[in-house]
Image (cartoon, rainbow, N blue to C red; front, side, top):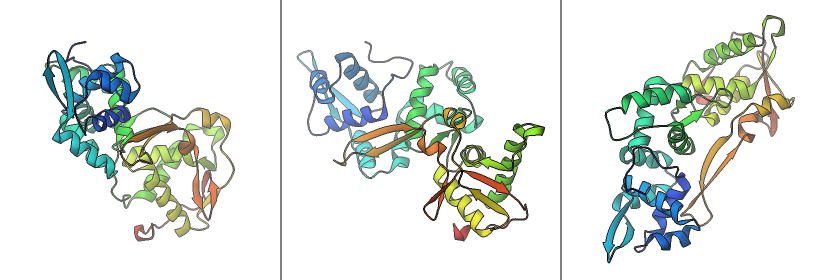
Length: 298
């Protein structure tokens, strides 16, 4: 396996963290890392080479044996992980990984964009560079970005878009009402619904304004509380068809040891409603469009 290749290797974010952490105390050989990570030689080698490309590891050769040690960049990467500073982790990867950085740059120009659109643009942009993309490569860096909260992916359409942790925009009520109208119309003229799915509304609004799903939930609850009688939440559970249509939401968190990370993927959060007074609400109805919204109450 060559030390360099055009496409990104299929390495998970948690595996990069495990590898960088394993080499933090002292030098390790590939065989040492096979044992530490409990992986095959090929998988250990793939992870090592990708970590080297990102400058998380340094290599030293002695008697035809390679030894790997965490770099200063790798230490900063681990520190950000331990601090759960996911924005800083993303920033390090965007600076050091040519594929991750290119993915975010192109997405900023095109968002929202589906996988095929991103691939076409990335292939065009990388034509005269040493790097290239395929579908797997986008899924790899997209996975990193989703877990770090830099990107979200519409659970119903699959479109990628950048997210911001900044406050909900002041025009949030108007975006909600416009998205509500759009979703209502897609049901067909004879199937217009008074009660619309909050999970679908959440995905639509988050994609439009680039807010986090958590931020949407907080803002929608506040909006409904500020407009009692005009907006109504319903507690009926989601139907099975809607549940089956959702992509999973990807998460990252520290393990109990506080040094490594675990990852998860579940549709549960996508299909959840919003919570108010310990009760889940899955549908929203609009009875009066003359609503008000005060962000300080969110």
